[in-house]
Image (cartoon, rainbow, N blue to C red):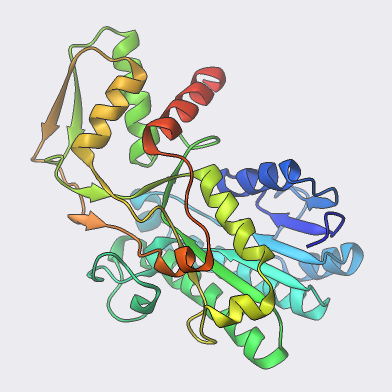
Length: 317
């Protein structure tokens, strides 16, 4: 890709989009186009088409999505499926209409069946029932993959999709009510340290395993896949199984994660595990052998990533 190529990042204010924006700027790309939600409603087909007609981007990165935790997904399922479907459909169709050379769709590991074999291979897609709590969101993300594949097959476009694992890092959501496990625990440990509390309670037994990836590594991997030649991307994927998992390929118990978190934060009290509380599936890990074979592996180890995240948290909260 040329450094002067016009790149439109949809969703540049979110955790994923902002990480990709930072990486592109660091790499020397000079013609990056962004729009806030107030400036461009991605669910409105006409305004999206007008934007593409005026701006004519050469490359599009779709990091925009309506996201939320279990409560939000259960309370507003129609919003989650409708808004995400419309965002993807409008951007992908306009990209085709206005001859975008390359497009990258960011998805989610929730596309995989609830009982998918671990680690989860790309081939697990559509092989079983989804987790019911976020099924509408997952269906929309699966539709996004299939939109990319269908336009490629019918129009010869070069639209790609990647599925990141659990992410953490800069620009995360640290609200205790609806944050993911890393930012929620980080805030809990931090507040316990400030208040000189004697203990921090963590839900579950601590035995469940999860994979965590620092968001800047995810951005690096996304740009790596975006910059691959079309022939290289085709060689490593299939026309109707073209998405690529992004992750570390390593998982960690919630117990070990909590101990590392405690050390990074500097909390001196005890960690108590409440086994009466839910902890989700025993293991959730992405198979990243396809990405590794293509020549990319992650750089930031978990402790280093937590230190960077905590430093950002202290400066922003």
